[in-house]
Amino acid sequence: MKKLFAILVAMCFLLQCSVCLAEGLDLSAMSIEEILDLQSAIKDELASREDYLGTFHWPVSKLAEMIPVPETETGKIAFDNEDSFAVRVGQFTDEMFNSYMQSCIELGFTVDYRHGDDFYYAYNEEGYYLTLRYEGIDTMLIRFEAPSK
Image 1 (cartoon, helix red, strand yellow):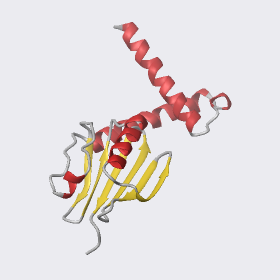
Image 2 (cartoon, helix red, strand yellow):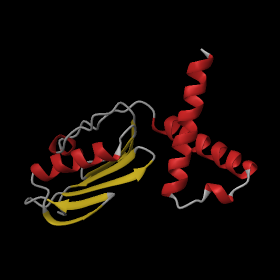
Image 3 (cartoon, one colour):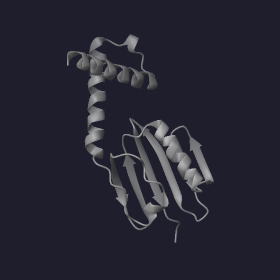
Image 4 (tube, helix red, strand yellow):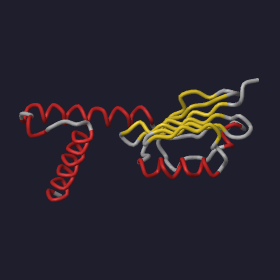
């Protein structure tokens, strides 16, 4: 049990170090107290995202049937109506983001597209607009809109 706990602590520390490096933080210039404060802040952020997202339910509208259902069990519907919806999905890595984006491209979301490392915006031929944005900490935003009437 102690060995498992030590492995989990080490993994948490490595995760925090990778977040610091991604954010451009220099751990060698930080005091132990600053590193511990940062560690606490990261743990709080991860816990709040998990609590916020909860169990994932994909919208049941005709609009939602037009794009793939993400392969995750964590998420939250931000809003859902007749003309548009937005969901945040959790437990979604950047590799999953790229795979999901490719699935949407294969469905024809290629008109007037804009693409970057953490986003993809495009229309399909019928004028439906898709927004995909990887928000970090294993979270992706999907927003989908019907053409203007």
